[in-house]
Length: 365
Length: 230
Image (tube, rainbow over all chains, first blue to last red; front, side, top):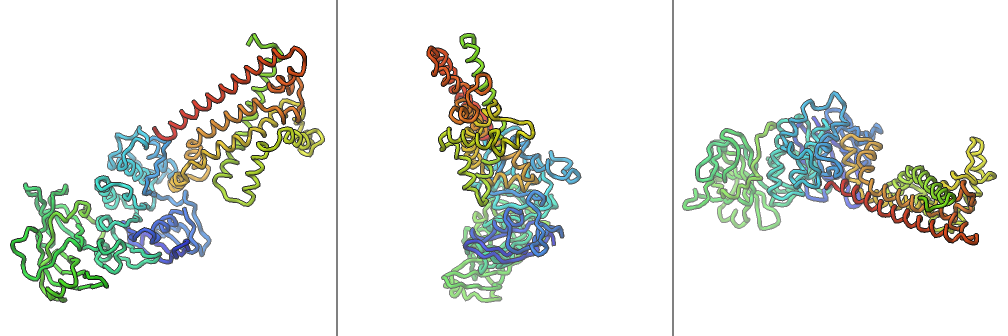
């Protein structure tokens, strides 16, 4: 276990009480605002002192209220990436980047800070000041500043929430590279299902200060009963491989033998990806559909049907590509006579597969 | 400066010396007290705030008399300091002490405002990057409040240059020793035919005050531009 968190704390309108042990890689804290995510991160960072608890990174204890152990924030060796960047306005980009590096123990300092600067593409900004940078540039510098502190744990508190969609798409790949190229565990807070699907090694779903679900992204995102960001966030995560880029602007993916098309993506042929398919973009059909504009049709059998109090239901369909989720009405479930084991077809609109739902390769399971 | 007589020039020089030292010595205390008032919550905070502001609202002559009671030869602190060979009563150092205390509230107010304008989140960011509290203060807070510190110091200097009531009560009006610029103006106005000298000193006073104000504006703007990151 690379990250072990146990916390009890009372906030004015929230009682936090939970614990989780996370494997190496990216642990995503997933929940709507007010669920206590930021409190958790601030407790791990030492910016907030919880009533009871213990946090350890690879058996290195940051605090343990039972042992009366409390490391102050500056001795925790963290790289905290804040939502608003929090770059030092009076320092240049170069000085911001080297701030944490300066305080890191000498033997822990990265030998080649240039590599980080190059990876984040901020080399041309070094002599500028933060006020002159765009939102995306600021956040790249903030990531670099955290990395260059040679942290033992990287914390990211909704690092993309303040950015528009284009900037989000610009920054997300850097977090994927962090996950795949840097061996430091990452605790990442978000309320975006797309970010969870792309980044998470494991997901801790929070609701009202409690852990409601903990597991791989594909499991947590598929469970409508915990969907922290509402039913719209429910979706399946599929592992795919890029098969071919077609001249008409589409990219063909191989999903466990089935073909999936989506608008052209930048990834190389042969690259392994994972994509999130939002349940509300999937249509079910009991017969093989004909004369339909949608290009993606996956054949499978109904696995489970979860109906809530509302008119909707989430149907999980087992396909060669993996389980696909569809959000349909209960009326449709009855009309199609859907039940466990019944063969059916899942239809996915090509353009419904948004670029922010397509992520780079995943190392951990 | 040839149009100033020797006594007038002496008063100007003394005032500059008194104000310079009063500002320099109180500045670290001013920053500390401003930081404590802006950032810390402790019992007695309001009391400290009141004490700091006392010289601003008390009649200067009362402050001067209290200084005399405390730091005079017979005063408790005055006796203690005398043991170490330090005597402030009726010396220029006493004038500096009076000026420093009278200017202190203005200095603290200016610095405190600038500290309150610094987002504590930036200081937190510094801490998470490995900087201990003193380092965070030196590398984040202090550079960012520099405009306020400079403005506070210049304001305090100008106030010290003009301090009269507490000074004359505490250290009297001894030419060459404790006769600062305002004391000299007062003294010249007490003797027949002193109006000329007094007027010249008034002109000097106005020049120094305006100069300090303009300098403070200029330095403040420069520093603010630097700190805001443009």
